Amino acid sequence: MKGLMVLHNNFEDCEAIVTRAVLIKSNIKVKTATPNPNLNVTSSTKLKIKTDILTTELNLNNDKYDFLILPGGPYVQELFLEENKSYLKNLFNIIKYFSQNKKVIGAICAAPSFLGKIGLLKNKKFTCYPGYEKYIDGIYCPLSKAITSDNLITSRSPDTVFQFAEHLIKKLII
Image (cartoon, rainbow, N blue to C red; front, top):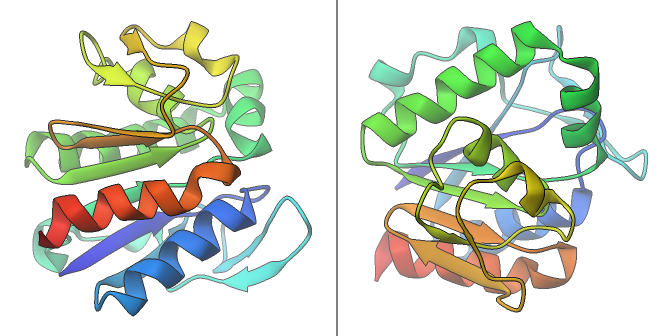
């Protein structure tokens, strides 16, 4: 079992690091990737991390990933405001690949808005960081900490990271 976590500068460190740690302790491998020009990313609290691979170097057909994780953080809003079209196009292509191949996709905090932007949450229950639901056409469940809807897992915030990881583990290995 192997997954991919995409990290962009200004990601929410708790959502990425805790989720990855819980999955690894459950014997689930998680590879990190970034759209940055080099492997280094900086979290929203200025924690510096070296990722495993650049998103431009991914070969999704050959690498056989079982799932995708999208942590949230301030970068989500920044990308939508900047309309960073090349990064968003690359990210949306990655998300679409996982969706079309019926792979599990987990998005926490503001990141479910990426799924909403390409229509994956239409008519599905989801949760996200309060305020981001306005970008998503779906069935918003504001009191839920984490929701599994088919192969999509959404979670609300850094406070719900353990519930998010639990939903991922249940979907992947149970």
